[in-house]
Amino acid sequence: MIRCREKAISRQEAGNMVDVAIDLHKRRSQVGTLDEWGEVKQQSIEHDGDAGEMQAFFQGLEPGSRIAIEATGNWWWVADLAEECGHEVVLSNPKKTRAIADACLKNDHVDTEQLLHLLRLGYLPRVWIPPAPLR
Image 1 (spheres, rainbow, N blue to C red):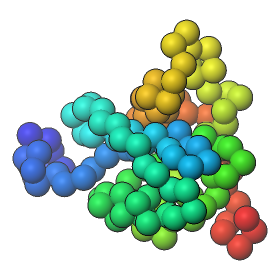
Image 2: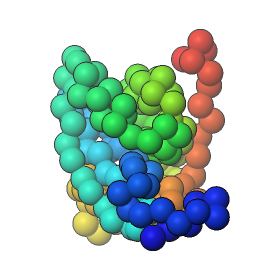
Image 3: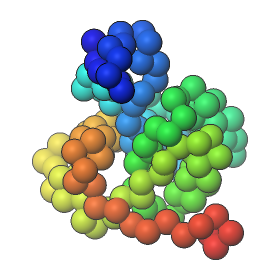
């Protein structure tokens, strides 16, 4: 049970209240979710020329979920899509995300999980996201 505004709710009632981290690539991305109870789930989302699978993923989340994305050359379309679905996008500065850069074991799963934990703890180094018309 968790407390939400003085009302106890069960895990089923909590819905999809999660933090999300995306290790974005050109054709496929590793997506991790961290729920209220600290459980991490990961999946791969294909998006080579089609954002449908990513959009369906965002639509399945509780509105207002936090989405962490590393600032890479192609982050903007994911940020736009997440914001359109009502989520808060946090753009991470990859040069300052030392937990990922200095990791001994480096792969998409590890990178995504590190982003998730840094986001949850409030330690994710952020980058300013310009408004959509300026992107």
